[in-house]
Image (tube, rainbow, N blue to C red; front, side, top):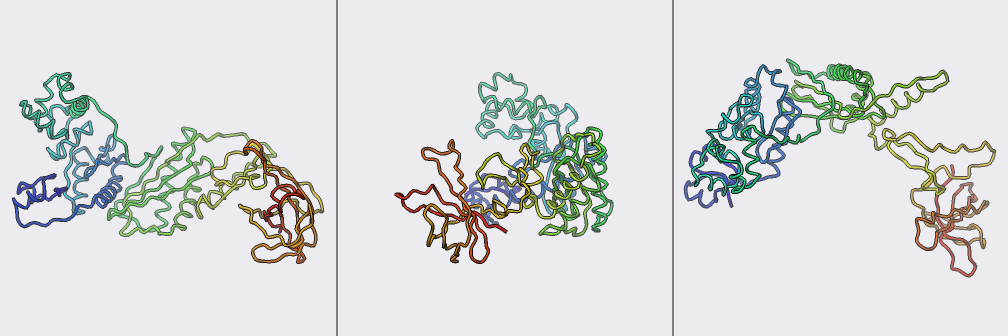
Length: 472
């Protein structure tokens, strides 16, 4: 067992991370030992990262106990780099954490400053000068590489930087040289944010935390109007929007909505968020209030403006689209479906149910049923999977006279058929399945849609019968 983490007092006593627990107990006795819980630590780090989103949406995890914040272009909101760093450190310390930080033009340099020269802010293009006095361990290289560098008399990063890159690469590998160049600000690799960045974003900070729902919704509408101006200038509309609510006590809540077509209507966006908030199983709890509300368009698409004729029903289509969006926000997009016709004669594959918000324009139109006094040829309710029935008596090469379905015995008084449907031959190897459908009405007036699995053959065994649907 080895030490995974320790407090400041244990560190002052000479203990260090990675040290065997038995050696630590031989040096100091007694001290408290708690078993490490990596899953809980990672969960806590992610909660801190959520809270840090209030400073910048570009937050990446530098496990197991660090975070990267890309503050490019946002430091002026706090005055300057030093003021922003102090604001972050003060806020995290108030929550009971021990924290140190560093700021530089590269991630490797910022990590080195935070761990070996806390609160250091490197000047633009001044990483090489600022990091030179730090020990080689600040490069986070392997212990064997750090030991070899010290044996060669290279104890600081500045001393290592004076050596030829080819010499270092041949001895320690290209990865070490690349890390060194990033620490010196001569190279950089991008960091990956833990959450996808929105295409467009607007936020509002409050001097006093807000708790009133009307104020929250009005704020969302104002933020939507701000984003709509940018979207209109670029000819785009939002398909997915996410509202992030930052509570004064550090809790963060994210609420997302979707639309079936690109939109930039602030009133519609506010209405969708209101429906979404009303439908949440876990209501939005403001606690002591929200001090920051952010709205981001996570998916923006081209909004095509088309001309409308005098006989066009564009308003009807728009109202239907808005109704679908509101129902999806209220009940979930997976519960609001649209049936898309398919070019097939197989009954169960004649239509495809997809979320209405994602339904693409139909290339195949529904076939209109001719006006007739006769009943429908296909049932109103079609089962997703045909259910087997037990035939008690039947007419040879005809429908069953008496059959049992779901433990109920039915006696047929009227029948029509057969209607033969063959499956696609290209989807089957060998014999192609065939179905003979019959419309059957029992003595109580209930109408069923049955089919025989395969054509009738006197010499063959009795085929299986299935219930595929019921008429209204």
